Length: 360
Ligand code: PMP
Image (tube, protein in one colour):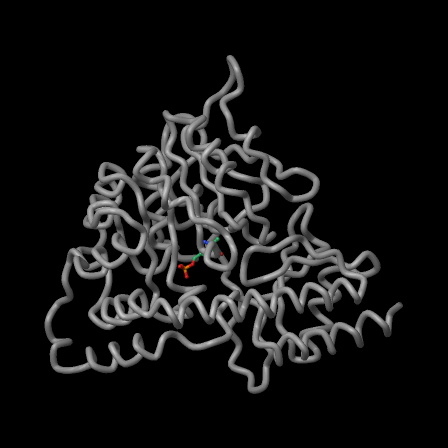
């Protein structure tokens, strides 16, 4: 703390990301990174871009990347916004589109950055409890007759950290039922088995879909995320972004992201490998007595009836396996386990077998 700090800083409780320890032979299943590398074409494009051209500023409009993303999603370039990871895109959306007099509605169990942004930008939030099976019920997000309406709505789909998917007709019900409110669907994990709401963008002026290159495209280190929505929503994001930083992405990130979008074959094959390993991991955990929530993400969320989540996470850590545990209401018993390579998942299962059987 310092007397030079502004009052804003005193009030902040920053988001604490999953740890990134530099320990050899660690089985790192705590931050939902992709276990396989990015597209070789993306790596080659970044190497090619690493030349004397870097003395020049990048394209402030990221036009080539927006055009490629628009084409991939069947939209127009003016319906695409890009930023430094979806965290930054979300931050701009909180300020530009989600802050209203009426509160922001969001699930009680959700991506933990959302409350951080609420505090940072002074949004009032109204949390809506997920159902006992941790599913999100669209009806809970419709305006109550004669009652409160949402200022805006945000949820992750698949949800984080539960991994549960809301089917597209459920998403549409929420968007269609709240024409006065922006509905932001955070699809960081959509490519591991979900159907994106991007196809609804032309139909609904209040829908904003946010995606990232960090998970399914294995480019978390590059920091590229984007939003899809009708032009007025995108323009609001551009206004906020331009007030912070006139260059959304550097030259290397633009080159790598563009080549990644073009390499559909690598993308599809590597997502499928994760989906296949997820099914195996699910079965193994159930055989050990875990309850595993149905996951459409690159992680699973599981609890054991006889063990505390924090104890399991600590015991795994001692065996050089990192998973994520949230000391939060309702989910304290769970572990969030990233789907790694088959070898990493086998190491996790072996370590868990030791722990679960020893204490049983
Ligand atoms: N949304 C959700 C639901 C996430 O889990 C994450 C990753 N922690 C993000 C957004 C941010 O991802 P990135 O900034 O790497 O795009």
